[in-house]
Length: 306
Image (cartoon, rainbow, N blue to C red; front, side, top):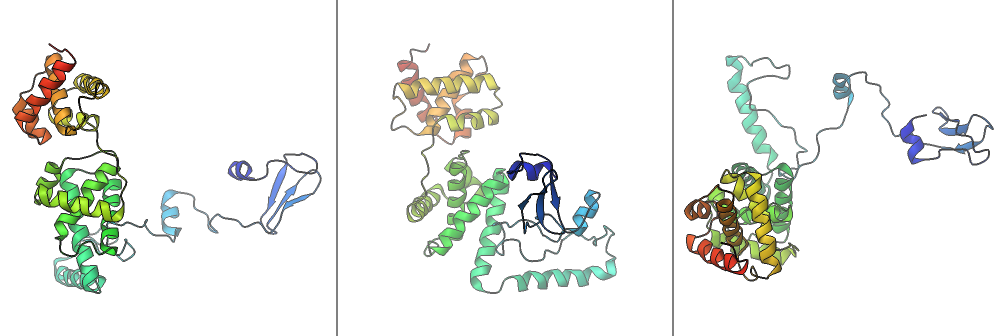
């Protein structure tokens, strides 16, 4: 009997206390070898009815497909025809057959979309993939953004707004939910949608879908900005320490988190002999140099930093 079964079910006989238990797969019974007590009956074997001795056999005999994905309008349930010019065995398709394969691909793409709603969803999810790819977001964030967008479609929140703005707002919300926030400037640059439109769409969908997103803190931006500025971990840790002290003294109340993070990095980089100009930090953080100077003066004065 397997150890996995023993951990999750009976480990000893309730009659004699023996641990010598045997599973009779023909009768579907769990039997004690010492006293013959039938502990479990009509037991269902949850494993496969076939055996595989290596990964190749396991892959061939398995009858389940890939996992569901919300990044496709049909959730990945339809057949996919690869765009590479190779067949199932990895051999190159002859030139005389490529035109025919191209027509098959084209018609396959057409029949996968049955109505206008599916067509719009397909276009939107493709745009979501493109934007997330430019921003270098992981798959779980993209899946979360796709779920948020689908909910917005179900609630009819798309009416009167462009698909691109709702997609960008969904990505922005997904980043915040995953604890790896991105600035509106980053999302705007990747999507070619203005920050104003993204902000409006974001407020609209968060209110309608009741997305309980915690407000971002300056600390959540520090490592991201330091990586782009090519600053080492010591600067990031020092900047986090400065932010924590500033938050304890309530200097950051009512201030934008990106501006506070930028000012803390400016101070920490100078203290660690890795100075960066206010212009360089402002370009990465998506704030103005004036904002960095104002936050810098407030923090350095309150913390009595020279």
